[in-house]
Image (cartoon, rainbow, N blue to C red; front, side, top):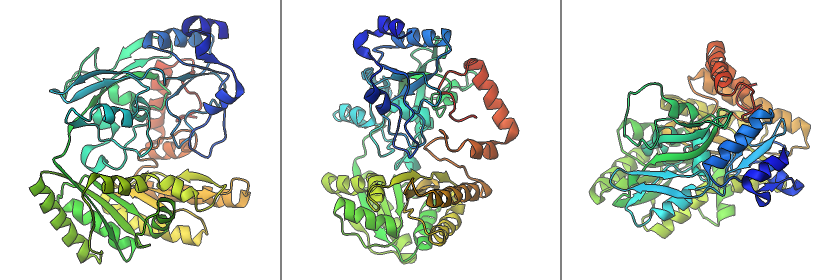
Length: 455
C-alpha cells in the first residue's frame, strides 16, 4: 500500500521514518504520542482524493494534520493508519475585496493570511492564539480573543471543500459559492465545522473578512477579586458596549505572564480589553467601560494605543499557555475549556477558583470571558498518579458544573479524546445517536480519524 501512496504523491512525499511519524502523532496536549504508520504530503485536492480512495479500499484509518497546535489529542493515530499532512497545500486562492471574502488551502495559517491581507484594508479576526492552520481551525470550530465581537469559525466559514472517506469531493455550499446568507437546504458547512476530521478532510475554506478598524485601543485593568472582574465583564456586555476583546487572567496567571513575558502588572485578577471602531466611537466605548470597571473597584486603565505596545500586551496573553507551564518546569499542561451563559460566569468562576485552592492544584485561569468561555490551565506531573487523579476529578467537576449551568464542556478546543463521555452527558442519547448515524452515513467504514469525538 505504501508503494501505491508513493505512486500518487512521489517518494519524497511519503515517510515511514519514526521521528517524522512521532512528530505527526502528537499535538500540544498532554496525551501521549500515537504515531501513524506513515505520513503523506499531498499537493492538491486531486491527490487527497486519490489517497483517500486507496485508504478506503484497504480499510486504513485517515488522520488529517494541520499544524499540530490542538489541545485535545485530535491528531493521535489511536488505531494506526495514514496521516495526511496538509502543510504543502498552502496557497491563498481567491481574494475578493469587494465581497469581503477569501478562499484558502488547508496549509495557510491565520498569521500568513493576515500578512497577505495587510495592504488590502481587510483582516481575518478569529484568533485562537496559536498560529493554527485555518482549515484546522474550521475542523475544531476554534475561536479566541476576538469572538465576542466577530464570532467564531462557525460564523466566519462561508463554504468548505471536503474530501469524504471514499475520496468523493464535496463542496458544502456548492462549488465556488460565497454568498452572505442562504436558506438552501441543510447547513452542510456547519456540519463539518467542528467535526475534528471525523467526517472528511477539509481541503479548502472560503472565509468571511472584515474591514480593518480605523482606531484600535487596548487597556488593562486590575481588580480586588475575581467576582469584581467578572461582574464588570457582564455589565459591560449588558450595556451594549461593542467591545472587541475582553479577556480575564486570574492573579496566578498574571504572575506567570509577568515572569514569562517580562511584564510588571499588578498580581491581581485582571481584564485585558480592546476597542475597535472610529476615533469617536472608541472614545465613547472606553469611557463607558472605565466607568463600569471603577464602580466594581477596578484600577485606572493602563493604556496601549500604538501597535507595538498593543502587540506586546496581546503576545503576553497569547503566551499564557507557555507561561503557565513555566510555573513548573518539566511538567505537562492540560487546558480545560468550559463555556457558560454570560449571566452564569461570576458564579462558575468564583466556584472554580475555590475548588482549585481546595484541591491543591496548579491551574491558573485565563478566559475569553466576553463570550462566557474560560480555561484553567492545569499544570501537572504526569508521573504522579495521585496528582493526575486529582486533576481528573477537578476537570470533571468543572465540566459538570458548566453543564449544570446550561453551558458546554468545550467552547473552542473540541472533544478529541478526553471529553467523549462529557459530550454524551451534554447532548443526551438522542443527540449522540443522531451523530452516530451521520458518521455512519459519511464514513461507513469508520476510517476518518477514528476514536475521536464518538466512542
